[in-house]
Every structure is written in structure tokens, then in C-alpha cells.
Image (cartoon, rainbow, N blue to C red):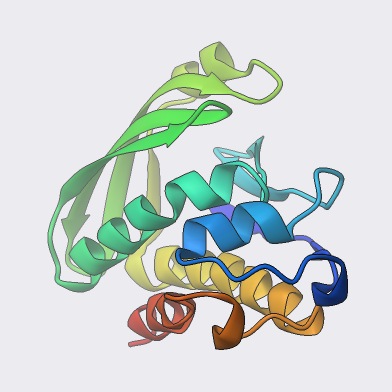
Length: 167
């Protein structure tokens, strides 16, 4: 499993200056529909992650999964997005982990292929680096467009997620 964050662009702040209270609202309002999607590769099968629609509804679960993995725990997560809907069961053993997934709904209708591909095994550091890279790319796009803590009540969550992925 790996994530290619691509190069999303946020809507420049001058065009959309409203302050949001939540990170979820900021992500959804700041990214245009036509920005690049990140791509998660599950057993080399590409699964898009939309910065506008998937990431905002997944961010809380991303935080929870990272926290559990950093704490050395096994966990399960239900990804809630309509175009990235799956249940992952993460089993950590030492510095590696196995992830079994039940894919329900993904962009491009690849659920059967994904379910047939089986589980993935990854190094914990690689797993954390991939999610950190995705969140860092989103934060960089927001900063480049002029967004900051002045535009979002819980902006610091982005940095906290990235920081928690570091050993």
C-alpha cells in the first residue's frame, strides 16, 4: 500500500475568504472539484482519494488510525466517504502490519477487484509516511493558496497529524 498525493491546488484565498470552524469544512471549501486526486495503491490497484470530497470526511478516521498505529495497537476503521467506503482491519505486529479490507464503494467501481486482491502487508513507518505525505500535501496546497490558522478554527490538527506520524 502506498499513496501518491499528486499536486492538488486550493482555491486562492481571495476568491473564498470565509472562515470555517472545522478542518473538514475548510478542506471541502478550499479544494476545487477539478483538482488532482491523491491515489492510494492497494496491491497496485489505484484508488482515488478526492481532496475535496473524500479527505474532509476521512480526516477524523485518519487521525484515529494514526494514533492507534503509533500506540502499537491493532484497530479497525470504517472509511465513511461515498467514493472511498471500506472497512479496514489493521493488525500490527512489531514494526509491520497487515491490513485486511472490505471494499464497499470506490470511484471507478473497482470494489470486486480490490476485494479479490487480498490484504496488504506494510512497514509501520511506511504506512505513517504515506498518510503524513498526503496530509502535508493538502496543508502545503492550502498554505500556497493563502490559508492559515486565521481561516480555520482547528487548523492545528493538520500539523498534529503530520507530527504524530514522525518516529
